[in-house]
Image 1: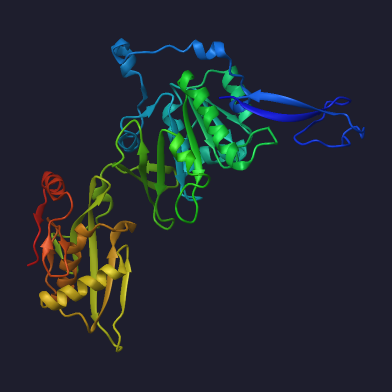
Image 2: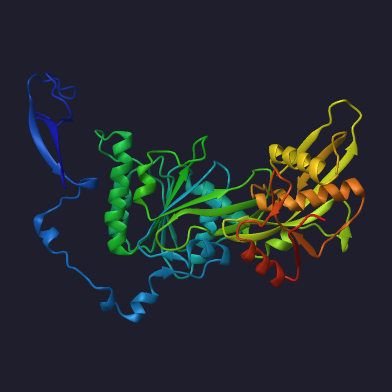
Length: 425
C-alpha cells in the first residue's frame, strides 16, 4: 500500500521541508510554507490501480520445459554451485555476509569472472573506487570487460541505470552504505525501502541481485533482522584470517539446500575452490605415525577427513599444561578424564598439546575418538595407521557412541578407500 507523507513547500522558492517552518531558510521569506500530501511507494514509484489490475495468475504446468531449464545461471565452480543448489536463480536476492577482510568482494569478483563472457553485470561500488577494484582485479587476473561499475551510495542511481541498460546480475557492495535520496527516511525504514524496491525491480526483470553485508561482533549481518527475512538466500563466508581456507555456508536458501558447504583457499591469485578437501587438510606421512590419528569432521552435510595431532610430554611443573589449536579446550579436559578413569591412559602428570592440521576448527563431537587415539598413540608411542578413520562420540561413562550421521560418513570414507573404526582399542 502506498505511503502518504506530509511535505511543506515554500511558495516563493519551492524549498521542501518535512516540518512546518515560519521562515524559509533558502529565501528568508516568512509564512510561505504550504502543506502538501505526497503519496508514494517504494523508491518513489507510483502505484496505480491499473497496474495492480494488470497482474495475472499463472500455473506451473503452463511453463514450457525450456523455460524451466533456464531458471538458473550456472557454469560456476563446483563449490559455488554446491552451496547454491545448482547456480544463481534468475531474479533472486542473495545476501552475502562475512567479517571485514574475509574475502567477500574477492569472491564476488571470482563470480563475475565466470559471468564475464555470457552475462552483463552491474557492480555498485559504494565503499571502494573503481580504481581500487581494478587494482584487485588485475592482481586476480580477471578481465571484467562485461561489467559496468557505478560509484554511488543511492538506490535511485541503481534504478536509473537498470532502466537504461538490460543487466543479468547486480552486485551491491555493500548494503550498509546504500541509502535513499529522500532525507526523511530513517536508517531502519531505509533498509526496508531499499530491499522492497530491489524485490519489486529485479524479480520482473530476472536480474540476479547480490547484496554484500558486514557482520556484527556477534557474527550476524549488521542491520535489522528483517533484511534476512526479505531476501531469498543468506550466505556466510567464514574462516580464520591467519588461515588460507574459507567456508561458504548458507543459512537460508529458498532455491536449494541449507546443509551444504563450499571450501575455498585464499592465495595471491584470489579465492580458489577446494574440491578435494582430503588432500588439502592432511599432511604427507608414511603409512603410520606416532601421535596422530585421522577423523571425519562433518561440515554441514559434507564429510571432511581431518588429521588430529597430539603431543604428551612429562610436565616439569606441578600443574600440567593443556593447549589446543582447532579443538575445544573444555572438550579436551573431559576426554583426558575419561581416558584416565576408563581406559588406563593417565595423563595427569603430562603436558598435552593438540593441533588440528590445515587450520580447521573442530566442533563436531564425532571426532572425539580420533583425538583419544592420537593421545593414546603419543602416550604409548604406538603409531596409528593412516588408512584408518576413527569416528565416534565419547560419553562421560566411557562408552563410544556412533557419531551423528555415522552411516553417511562411513559410506563416504569407505568410498575413498579408508577403514572405519568406531571403538577404542
